[in-house]
Length: 129
Ligand SMILES: [Zn+2]
Image 1: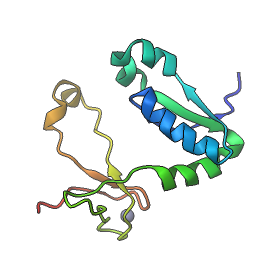
Image 2: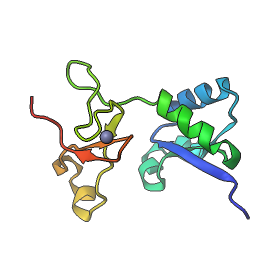
Image 3: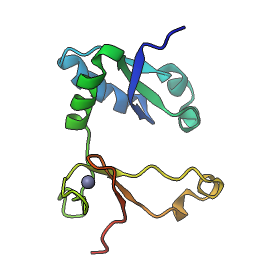
Image 4: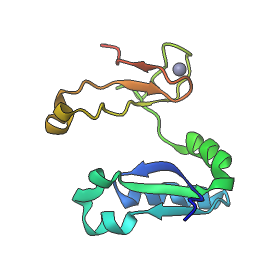
């Protein structure tokens, strides 16, 4: 079967996905939540299957990405100021995904937090303030 869907984001919990789904729907973009029933039945399996996927029709891909980048939450520091990318000075910064190493799976707490710039892709460590 042909895959006509694009996964915009994935969420650990259905509730989070539903918030974003509502925002997309209000902009007239049809959204599908993949695996939400699996996650709802067994929340502990969410990580293993990659969470609830927020999907759109392929023809809505560009609009959906733009919308998602507008609505998603970006990282802030302790004073609630947006984290600024040291490379491009944009304030659209996310937590970098963990390296999926064997050690990380056993001891996720030893992986230091790193940021990922959503604009230029720079990965950097938090400032020690
Ligand atoms: Zn950047």
